[in-house]
Image 1 (tube, rainbow, N blue to C red):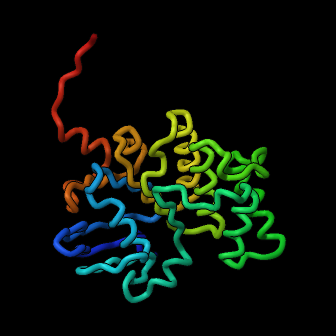
Image 2 (image 1 turned 180 degrees about the horizontal axis):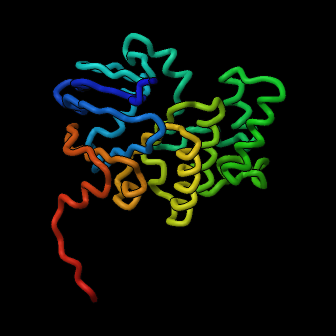
Image 3 (image 1 turned 30 degrees about the vertical axis):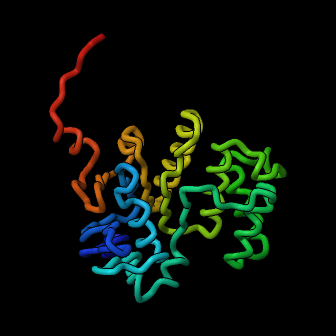
Amino acid sequence: MANEWMIETEGLTRTFKKVTAVNNLNLQIRRGEIFGLVGPDGAGKTTTIRLLAAIMDPTGGTAVVASYDTAAQPEPIKQRIGYMAQRFNLYRDLSVWENLNFFADVFAMTGAARQEQIERLLQFARLTEFRDRRAAHLSGGMQKKLALACTLIHTPDIIYLDEPTTGVDPVSRREFWDILTDLHLQGITLIVSTPYMDEAERCSRVGLMYQGELVVCDTPEAIKAMTEGDLFAI
């Protein structure tokens, strides 16, 4: 039977001079689950994602992603993952269709399969009617959906999303999460960092981070049960 863990870390640590951004992180993420990293700014969420995406090397410990060590075997990992950064990082002067074609070029996609994938992603992200609009002229929510579509161009097994809905309106947030749910149903492993507790409740499991450390890791229901509270009717 295949290993159920898509991501495993042991003692994963990253320091920047005198600051420890991630401290002794021990984490296991199953294939096909939506895993939420939740915490305030400075908790270490972005650094954790960059470590797991093999963008940054650890200063201690190990991380294994899709059976590859992030420090020793980064290139095979990069072919298996998609990474959506916190800030909109696509080409603002290019249209929606041109951005998707650019990323298809990056991953050396050719022929009919390339065009079929672009058309499928336009429909999936609900951007078909905006295909000729420049990215700079899209709303914040549509920019996020375009970024996700470009992340999906090479059909990754794992997708990292760093606070993907920060700064967008509630309707766009809901639509974006509907798309993520569809990806989850397709068996893609999703790692989502968010400061929003309502988004954390949509995850299979949640890791609460604070000052670089994993405070607790469990299902949203189990974490809520840890906190006693009273309900007041107004």
